[in-house]
Length: 117
Image 1 (cartoon, rainbow, N blue to C red):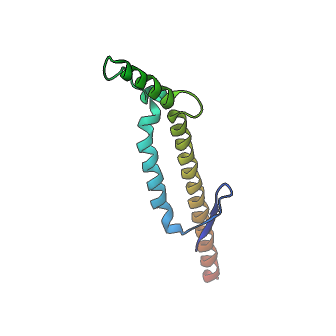
Image 2 (tube, rainbow, N blue to C red):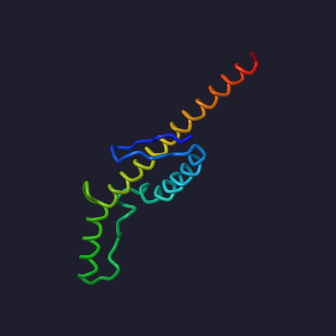
Image 3 (cartoon, rainbow, N blue to C red):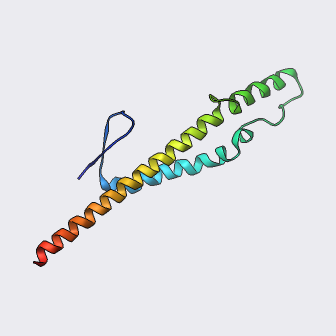
C-alpha cells in the first residue's frame, strides 16, 4: 500500500511504508553531517586570517567571508535553511510513519475483532 505524500505543490510522491525507515536514516545522516557546519554560524565558515600577507590573500579572505557569512544570500544562511528543510522532511516522514502504524494497528484490531466473533 503506497501513501501519497505531497510537498509544497511539487507533485505527488508514492511512498511505500517499508521505505520510510531508510529515508529517515538518509535524511538524519544528511542533517548530522550538516550540523558541524551550521553549529559555528558564520564564524564556522569564515577564514580567520589570510593565507599569506599579500594583498590578494587579504582581498580573497574579505570576499570569501562576505559570501560565506553575511546576509540573507550567504552560504551560512543557505546551510541553515537547508538544515531546516531536512528537519521538516524528517518530521513529515515521522508523521507518515505514525499514521501508517496507527492505520495498521486499527486494521489489525478490526480483523482480530471480526475473526474473534
